[in-house]
Image (cartoon, rainbow, N blue to C red):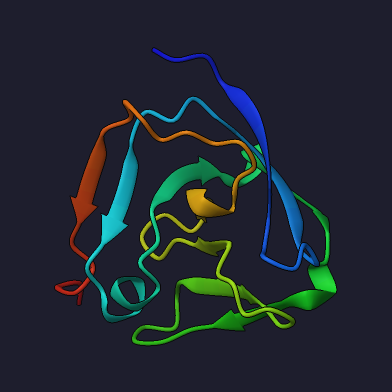
Length: 118
């Protein structure tokens, strides 16, 4: 098991800044219509392991299908930094491309099925 590390992240314009704690057991992709278009690579973190440090007022929310998951984006630059998960709403899927100095080498990637969710 990897050691839990703290990473800082932000959207492109850095209006939204956040931190996560994770041991990065795996990364995930999703085949739903939204995730395919944004091409995100995500890590799942519990809400207690994520902190929005600035820019709460710059966060926009997009919901579709069941209107359960909350997909967040920056209202300034449009970047998707994270979403609150549909099946496990106390977890966030965090876009690892928004993390500072993050290297995904050696971390397994699991493809999840979002397109077939009812």
